[in-house]
Length: 310
Image 1 (cartoon, rainbow, N blue to C red):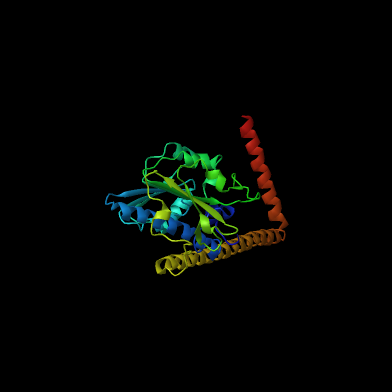
Image 2: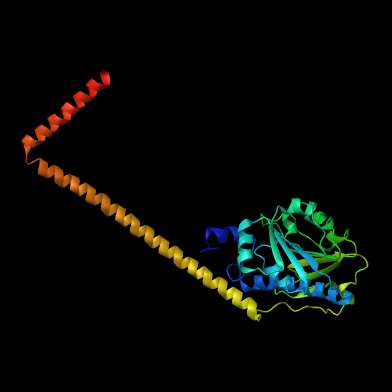
């Protein structure tokens, strides 16, 4: 992608991470936001059905710049932990997607999952396809209530960042009491009976066997995708665009200053050279003075050699 600073380019990682309002098109933002809204609604339904009043701890594995954590943080009495391997992403998250109930941690995901502290909910979007045996890793996760994650559906070969390809429904047969959902390219989420023709992603929801299934709740499908009408989110996107423009302006100003500095250096060097030429030309008009100067230099050289030999 053109016109990205080195830091933004590291976050973007050739398309693997979204920076809302900076990278990708609006359709990609809609899909991301729709997934996290689905996660949030599901957790809120659990809280409502159990009349839970204790703090709810949620971890977002591979949180990127934190926009998903920001959405989840709207859950009442929630504590959100976002983890990622990218320090630039987490720095961005701390700056633009920070709330009192959100914390971010820099971790190696494979190591972190193997020692994962117990959370009430574990969520993740398009992360496990980057991990060898990613679905087995997801299956090994323990939590108090539910695990909700999305991976690409039936992705063909071609993305060098993705290890798991061609994921279908049968790949989740080992997940206990799993419910599968599908997201279309326009962000709409479907249940299995209404599965779209060519899903973009497949969402797995599983957890304690005694948990009420989503199909038994008030949630209905297809679930409409998020539309960019959220005032606060649009303000954040606009803010990011303004920051990007300021960054571009600073880059241009820096380049202009560099050009001016190089021009000054060239002028100074030319001036020094012209002064030396003028001095030599003036000195050539006085041959006797030049002979004296030459003799003086020769004498100094002779004295120096004598002292070194002493």
